[in-house]
Image (cartoon, rainbow, N blue to C red; front, side):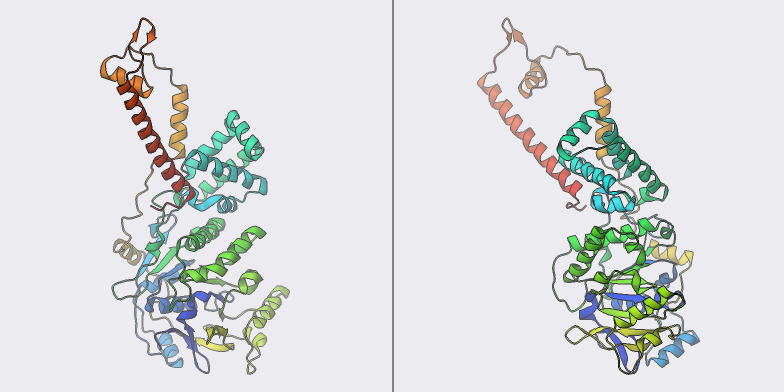
Length: 502
């Protein structure tokens, strides 16, 4: 196969995906049990061999087999012959990740990096509650309070709910913040914690370049997110992947048209991203999908039904692999018709009829070719993977994690001073009794007087007048203090706004 494309399977001719169009996004659809996961593995292996890193969610654990050496089972060898593929067993460089830190390296983000829009969706807040979260973020930005983990968010909500002076200040600037709204957000925050959200938020936060590595042989690393447990919290799963897409969009530089993608991102169970999503969020996703191509990132949605993806986003997906659909219900029939009409029609093929007749491992395939025009749809026999089909064992996974280049980098939680500690210290200072003034003399008393923190000896007329030297020292000290304060403030703001990556 040519170095500028990856092999998908065979119809009346070899079906390939040109690497230069790998960042034009794609869609893999089909009913349960029709071969979507194997197709995803074939594409992931192809991109890895081409030196393109991959990120994919492993919903059932089956995709983890890409880390293990393939096995020459009869059905694999037979399929390789049918598609005229010179098959040889292989295994690929894999890094396992897990939001819960159980089946892979922990993967975290800070509250500030997540931002108010995605955080509100994660907690399923209404418009009024989302407005309160926006105000909270604005206040934290202005006061230089770092929002890193859930205890920071909880402390900020408690402050917002109990501090009458603060409520009046915010009401004058941004509008009413009701105790009922704050209470509702706190209850949703508790639900998020019960779902394991506390393990996701914190530091060290994920550094994107760690997803974009190649091994010594130049093959792209396949990053697999263990998602079997995560699927028990579908809102957390969908919001995390959306956050990751958004971070890639914001942080990666523009590269324009490239010979191959910088990263390919597979979003399995894509319907979870769009279910009940507000129009504003759909528009944001559409914008990210449309523009992230110029950052060299390809996004491939994997789902059962093409109707799961909104039309505005579907129009951005140039490479399509359609496995069998079943037409048992009116919605199924509508999906079949919709899937058939999105392909460039082949006069030799009744697309709508064939979709319901495809066997396991067969698919309708259309990819971009030439000047970026979709190829005519073809009934295709999908190539077999060269790595193992099926999951790795628990022991194999443990060995891969222990030998991973990421071992030790994200394993231990870092809990630096942030909003929780700052507010806690402020409350302690307010409750502490005022210290009694002591007679401060000598150099300590002089410096205290100059810096404004103590008292100098007084003469008959009260406080003594400063000498010229004392005035000079005081002005210099004040300048230094202001400079240090400004630098700390800027560092805090950079952290809060998420633009300063650790």
